[in-house]
Image 1 (cartoon, rainbow, N blue to C red):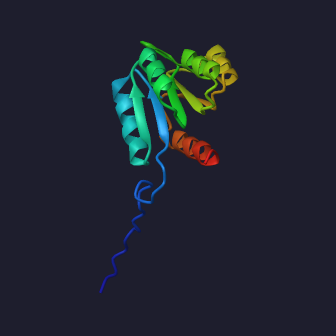
Image 2 (cartoon, rainbow, N blue to C red):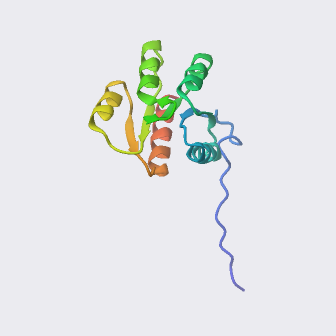
Image 3 (cartoon, rainbow, N blue to C red):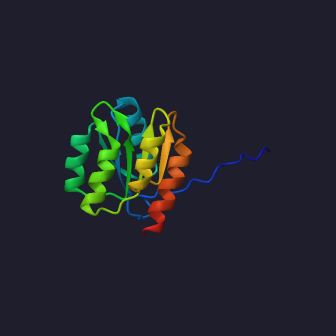
Length: 140
């Protein structure tokens, strides 16, 4: 008789009663925004996805977030302006910036505005995931 190995099923964070991590995702690329939203929601996060800086600023004015992921410079989005607005408002929220290429000055500006990291596309989702978990867990 052959034994069938089964992978243990772990309950989702939602079913275990943990509060959802609230993530603001700001990215103009619809495909990337949808993919990241889906992956984060599968992890038990509540994601507010915005496609423009103006939409993100309205959302930030209405709601508190545990973590922010923002594009650096894409059509309609200036992630550095978003970080600056968060800093000026006194919001102490960890954030990462994603960009299609490394540029020294925006990287330095992002770090000075309090960004935790600056990711270059293509994204390493597992690195983002680990950073989110580490930062939100330390705030609990």
